[in-house]
Length: 354
Image (tube, rainbow, N blue to C red; front, side, top):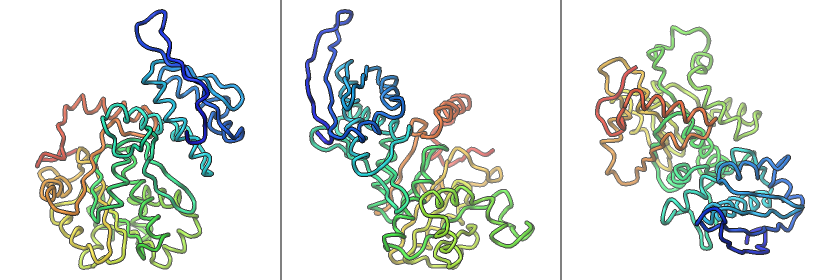
């Protein structure tokens, strides 16, 4: 196995249940890597125990796993993947452990997960820049990253906290560092100001910054701050409101439109037709959170209907189960959905205003 050896495997019968209980010991070759895998005070193992309802008892560079057969195999896959990550020089945070567990569970929930290799090893899609490597933490994130790799136009739609915007910016940064594109263009519709930015104080950057701060945050997370500043100054990274896209052809560029649910029909059409030679476009938004005036159709909702059969267009739909922020965020999303009983707005021609 990758990074560790199965010392013993002896399925046994529980005295209190008819369910088979599996027990085995995993031994990892490198003590330092094993310590990083287990986490400070074995916090990573405790998270696996709590989530999968197994026992994970460490001893030196080994860990004894016992519990339900399915759950223990999920723990094995998660630990195997995380150990491989440490071997490659990566660090392990709580969110990485949570992601590995999600993907290990998905391997059993889905008869054939596209990202599974032989011997049930996890092979998660990832984005890598000089500063950081991000691995998919949910099956939908995995599908999203792979869609970004194969399609020129990708729609990532769903609730907040699912990583759709963050991963889009990370992927654009990866393309720029590898020389696949010459520049990154980040845009958002400035709905709150009606795109009449001249009424706001300051220069253009100061006018636009409040609407594009999440995109800045993702950029600085993926690239060194000084390089981001130099790239912005040189025009290699351009951050502008949607209104400034009109009349341009965006060739050799990774172009991201965030909060796209707040575009009108004409704005969305205008944006999509800016795609130029060797260009990549990523459109993100939440069709259930439209801030347009009442009666105005969301350009995102309409585009998802019009383009659903167009070759080269990928649509990835995130759900509340894909929320990777604080667990409370997922519960909040579910509570609001239950309260309002909103159908899948991405399939409906009429957006929910508010």
